[in-house]
Structures are given as C-alpha cells and as structure tokens.
Image 1 (cartoon, rainbow, N blue to C red):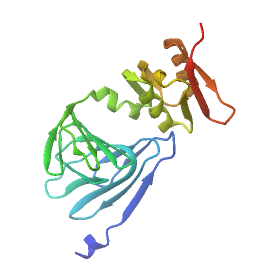
Image 2: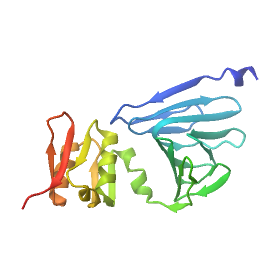
Image 3: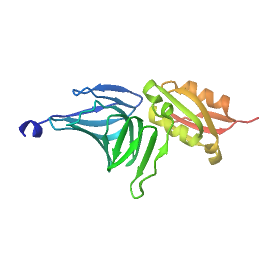
Image 4: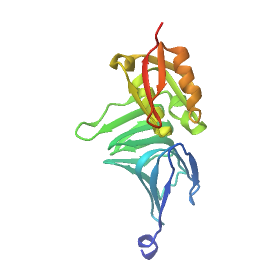
Length: 216
C-alpha cells in the first residue's frame, strides 16, 4: 500500500514540431506528437496515463494483473493488449486502434476503428480508419486523401508556429491529396500552389500566410 501511494508521477512533453519516444519501465512505449503533454504514473497495481494536450501512440506491454489506462478529457481508454492513437484538442478526443483492442468507457473497440468524443455530444459510432494515414505522423509525414484545404492548414498549424487565412471562404473547400513532410513547410506551400489554383502570400506579420485564388 505504501508503494502504491508513493508511486512517482512523471511528466513528458514536446514543443511545436517536436516528436519524442518514451520507453516506460513496464516495457510499454509512448510516441508523443507535436505540442503534446502527458503524465505517467506506474505503480505496483496499475499504470495510469493522463493526456493533457496533443496526440500520442501507445504501444502497450500487456499485463493480466496490472491495468493500463489513458485519461483524455472526459474519456477513459483501457488497454486490451494493443497499439492505439489518442488525440486531445479543446476537450474533443479521438481514439483509433492500430492493433488489438481497447475499451472506451467500458465499450470494446477493435483494430481498424475509431471513435470521437465531443463534450455535450458524447461518443460517436465506430468508424473504419486508414491506419497508414493516422500513424504517418510518427514517421514525420502527413497524408491527405481528398481533404478540404481548411483541414489541411489546420493540421499544418499544429506542426509550425504559423497561421493561415483565406481571401475567399470558398478556397477552404478545395481538396488536396498527397504525402508531405511535417518539417518542410516551404515544400508544402510550393506544392499547394502547384496542385491547386491557389496562390500563397506571405503577409507582413511574421508567420502569417494568405491563401488566395491564383490569377490567370
């Protein structure tokens, strides 16, 4: 009981654009994505993770007698021998199972599926996922498949200290597909101009960009 009460809580975090892998004492590992903060508490009876911000992939060494759980906002995820991705942003949570299965608030979800949670709306139904796309960030890449430009630039803002604005709201509906390096913002901007009828303008304010229609 004394060992359980006095188990140490350790905080791990990454800065914007940084990725980090943490090896835990139980044989599990955690990959932290950009701008992520979490706390780990491993005691003789349980293994508890508190995801406070960001995104992480948990590769869990399963133990029958010691549970592994991740708290993200109002959502509790329990491992059933698995690899899974959890993302927390403004109290909204998404959980995707890359291998094995998890329990979310007591409900089982198997490999290849995802559920989202919004405060006030609760848990969504299970949805099939593109595993390669979800875990691509671990390898420093972003994969888009017919993604609206508004979602694309929102994702880029997670990895770089930049802000994007649309000169015309309809530009945000343009769709983009491709694989991009999370660290190479200049190449991404050049690719957008090449693939879409869009021009990227660097505004006078540092790290701000305006997306406008390209002039013929």
